[in-house]
Amino acid sequence: MKKLKSTILACAGLFVTASLTSGAAAGNSLPAPSLKSAYKNDFLIGVAINQRQFTGEDTQGAALIKSQFNSISPENVLKWEIIQPRPGASGYDFDPGDRYVEFGETNGMYIIGHTLVWHSQTPNWVFLAEDGTNYCDRATLLKRMHDHIQTVVGRYRGRIKCWDVVNEALQDNGELRKSPWLKIIGDDYIAKAFEYAHEADPDAILRYNDYSLENEAKRRGAIALIKKLQSEGVPVTAVGLQDHVKLDWPTVEQEDATIADFARLGVKVMITELDVDLLSRSRSADVAEMQKQVLSNSYTNGLPELVQQALTKRYADLFSVFLKHRNDVTLVTFWGVTDGDSWLNQGRMNHPLLFDRQWRPKPAFAAVIQAAAKP
Image 1 (cartoon, rainbow, N blue to C red):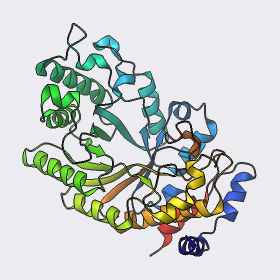
Image 2: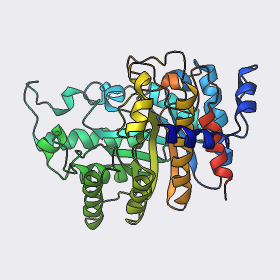
Image 3: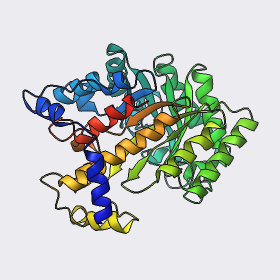
């Protein structure tokens, strides 16, 4: 523990954050330089945004998005349960999606579509027969998938530049998830989804997106999947590494190897849902000891300095890996604007992002900016 603390505090001396934080607190001004300007020669810097932000209800969140990021992903409004909650042409609700895309266009951003085919947040009717109790057949589900992808991707053709076509199709052991998509259609449902998306917008980047690909078994499964799709001529052009990480997992070496492995396949590599979960149990004994208070949810008044600096160092280390692979990594997206927006709160107060609940930059923000300046 002492060794960990001394290492963290030594690194903390490298991060000059006082002027940024005090400037943001006084008058709620925004930090400079911005993330997007710091990484303008390396890769796009994106963020997942919610409806309050792209409609302008959260004015401070919207200001941060415009100031700091040049790419956006939608947290929920393009997921099937939101955009087509009911069957048929009359079952679509395009208003939230339209406003999301308009926000991106107005602010000159690279716009991501998330997500077309997923086992979660898909209405039950999609998988059910007319009797409402049994699964539908393969032909019916393929038609529903085709119609949905054609309608949604077609509506935003040329405007949404990149789609998460299939999301989280693998289990942790690298085998295909036993989802209704797999059970009803078979393992070619993934290829069909990419083919339908390419048909709807031939110029869009089409992405396979998943979490924990740093785990060797799951990574092997994903590599095998991408190679199979490529051998069949399926237009998968990018892989998304979600990177919902912990303080001590994945290691820098695991992150490095994962990016390199997918880059060798000739696809674009994107970090799609980056955050650092401080409430999950860590594997390192030293970090677990430091986290005792976090796990009992006693950080409701903010992070102690030691944990704040551990988070700072974690982001600095991650971005050093992303920068090492700047020729292959084309986008890094944070999953949420501020700590208060994060899906990781879930009844407890997490602190996983670069901006706190008052929209102020944390020391980790300065670490990420400084990482970009290193040769």
